[in-house]
Amino acid sequence: MNKQLLFVKRPVGPAEADTWSLVDTEIPDLKDGEILIKQHYISLDPAMRGWMNDSKSYIEPMALGSVMRAGSVGEIVKVNNHPSFKIGDFISAYGGVQKYAVSNGQGCYKVDPKLAPLPTYIGTLGMPGMTAYFGILEVGKIKEGDVVVVSGAAGAVGSIVGQIAKLKGCHVVGIAGGPEKCKYIIDELGFDGAIDYKNEAVRARLKEECPKGLDVYFDNVGGEILDIALSRLKMRARIVICGAISQYNNKMAIKGPSNYLSLLVNRASMQGMVVFDWADRYGEAAKVMGTWLAEGKLKSKEAVFEGIENFPETFNRLFSGEKLGKLVLKVIED
Ligand SMILES: NC(=O)c1ccc[n+]([C@@H]2O[C@H](COP(=O)([O-])OP(=O)(O)OC[C@H]3O[C@@H](n4cnc5c(N)ncnc54)[C@H](OP(=O)(O)O)[C@@H]3O)[C@@H](O)[C@H]2O)c1
Image 1 (cartoon, rainbow, N blue to C red):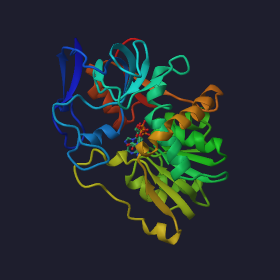
Image 2 (cartoon, rainbow, N blue to C red):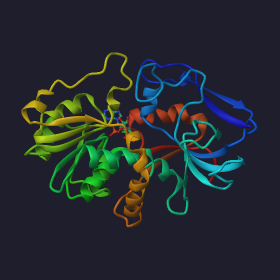
Image 3 (spheres, rainbow, N blue to C red):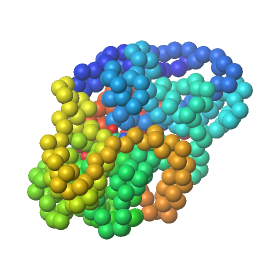
Image 4 (cartoon, rainbow, N blue to C red):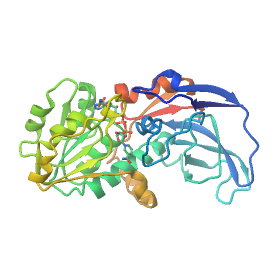
């Protein structure tokens, strides 16, 4: 039998428990060319909140009644005549929030649990890590000596952005919620400075941390913090619009930046990004980051919670910030 979390109600504002329904279903017989994945870990991502809205985006909105869309990592336990996968392979997939996923293998790729723990393949070596890598290098175009500021700095994307920028010789300041996260990004990840946006005045602290302004702002949160960052740009600064988590649960319209004329004054640029645009280069990034991980130059942290039935409560930790690192749900024993 399978356990599936169905998406049954489009939320307005934060997603409440009645957004989903947990059901027991039978695992169907595999058609020719299909595989059955026993899912070990499911990825919880802020983007999921956007997928619940019935509006145009970079991906189709989720249909009501469908299995909650999610990245996952698991083991193939059954195969019906697939050219690329066999029983026992571990793979990364978009398996959704369920114990077992049937797939034709599209978008799936093999991972090696001996090289890195499985959750790392949906974190640093998965979609968030790819976002950080291509976002800071290709969109942020960092160079040695740049002053780089990143929000959501203790999270899945932000923590990797900051570490890559440090590896490239930048001065890195992170913005995160709470003293524990701020201590973590400095002591454990080697950031040069940290601003606790929940307890400190961000505008004044950003001035202290970057007295001459910033070259790159990697934005994961949007809202007021984006506006403040815009007020501290250096000439030809780059702003990477990666996400705007502070706005995802809005019941009203998104709050846009009012300081945008700073782009004009400073000949700066602000560019949005979607990680899927670099899909054909994920292998290259995984190789580089895998080497950094093995050499201890890059640290990866996952916050692992357990049980599909705990998905709604766990999902909301993305917004409350009650987790450190990449948020992951463990579904089945390794
Ligand atoms: N464009 C792309 O292709 C792409 C791909 C992946 C992710 N993203 C975006 O990247 C961002 C980070 O994603 P992630 O997976 O790395 O998540 P994450 O940072 O691991 O988790 C979300 C974090 O956001 C912070 N947060 C929540 N509400 C906030 C608010 N109102 N103001 C400021 N911070 C808030 C919380 O940290 P604190 O405790 O510090 O508040 C929370 O831990 C998201 O906006 C996501 O949508 C974009």
